[in-house]
Length: 204
Image 1 (tube, one colour):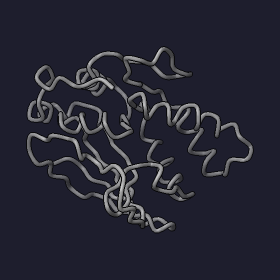
Image 2 (cartoon, rainbow, N blue to C red; image 1 turned 180 degrees about the horizontal axis):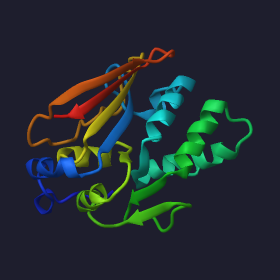
Image 3 (cartoon, rainbow, N blue to C red; image 1 turned 90 degrees about the vertical axis):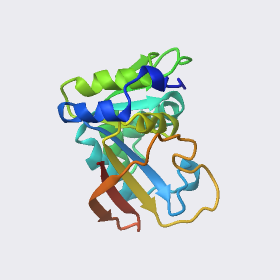
Image 4 (tube, rainbow, N blue to C red; image 1 turned 45 degrees about the vertical axis):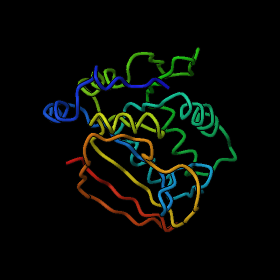
C-alpha cells in the first residue's frame, strides 16, 4: 500500500473549503461493539447485505487498496453468477460488480473488468476524482481509508455495529495520526433485523 506524503497533499482545512464543490467520499465498514474491524471475526447477514446494496445505489466509483480489492475480487463477481447464492448475495454482488473501481497498488500487475490500477499518490488522486462529475465515491478497507480520513477527504461515515464483543483483533483507526479531533454529526440510524445498528455520520 502506498504511503501518503501528507506534506505534498492539501491539509484538512484546505480540503474543507472546497468540499461543497466536490463529490462526497463515503466510508462504510462493519464493527464489533468493542471496535474490531477484522472481517474474519464478524459474521454477515442477509439484512446487512441489503443495507449495503442500497448504499451502493448512490455510488458510481469504489476505491480500494490492494488487500481489500483481492478480498472482494473475484469473490463477489463469482457470487453474482453462482446459482447457490442467496437473493441478498446476488443483488449485492450484481450491484457491486457493475460499479467502476480504482485500486491503489504498486505491486498489482492486472485487475479484472471495470477496475483501474492507480500507482499515484492516493490523496492527490482522490482530490481529482472528487472534482469529477458523478455520484458518491465509496472507499473500503482499513489502511487506505485511515490515511484519507487523516487528510480530511472522507465526507460521510457508515458504521454498521454488530451485536458481538470479540475481545481481540484489529481496531478501527488504531494507527491513524489525526492532526486534530474529527467531529462528526449523526444524521441517520437504522436497526437491522439481525441486531446490527447502522449509523450514518457526516463530517462537520
